[in-house]
Length: 258
Length: 127
Image 1 (cartoon, each protein chain N blue to C red):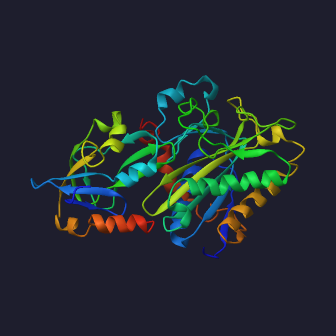
Image 2 (tube, rainbow over the protein chains, first blue to last red):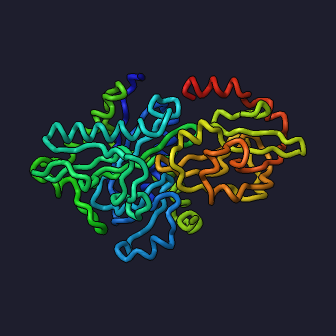
Image 3 (cartoon, chains in turn yellow, purple):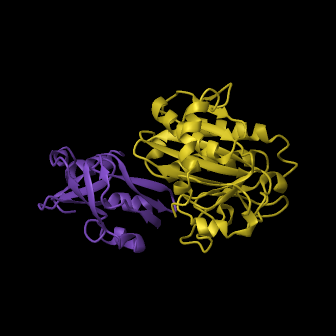
């Protein structure tokens, strides 16, 4: 595989529309560079991102998220309450070996996190589906279990089918590029009954930023590349482009497409 | 697969019907790769599209995937039954699982697409 470094940008938290717009521009960057690119970010204010085809009427009828800004992702899956999570966005060109099917890119990020957590003594694993899961149609992403989702056993507990999910990702497969983003739940979100990684293992994760850095270095190693931490955020110097791209995410016809 | 099909590298098939229209769907390979299908959105009838333009989306448990116009033209009909019976795509991708009918604006664009052998080779090469 290519030895070009994987650029990783860490952005300041932003609103939901800005975040989705920046992810879209990141995908174009992967196409331009011809390799994996990654950015990290948080959400301010706390917001809810809906999967591409989740029904807006259902979302608006959920009392636990009432009052939170809503944005629709281009990727599928369930709704995520953002604010206490760290979101990663990644993109690869379709020529990348991980783009041949959907699962390799998921596994690249998820397996790397499992390995990093294991290194820190945290029992984590990738969920393996046995077929259709009765949780599939649930509204919130963290109530669902997709193939490869990262689940963690609470401190002092053995593995259980009820182990909470702490990382889920969603992908959009385009002709030239495959963008993917995922939510690493650090602390319980404002809605939903989902403990975060720091709630489950506060002693084992004293410095989340260091954990995240090590995690992504494992991802880059898996594709044979070093990491190139970028000195500024991805959005820095791209304000006008991001603002222009954010317009469609703010439009009612996008949010209310279903 | 029928010998009269042509394919785009983005996994759409197209069949020239001889009445000035062409039928478009997605290949069995693409359907299988999607795995369990959840939702589909088809384009509006009357929409004019360019070859390579995204004309619809399919959500599976794995991802949301776009599908593309293999040729330029006007969408004259969509298969409204398929979004309510997504299993049709897997059961009969080249027949009942058709997705749209296009009136091509330049029939020569079909000649530039892949025949079955070339498409199979493309899939095998991981494209």
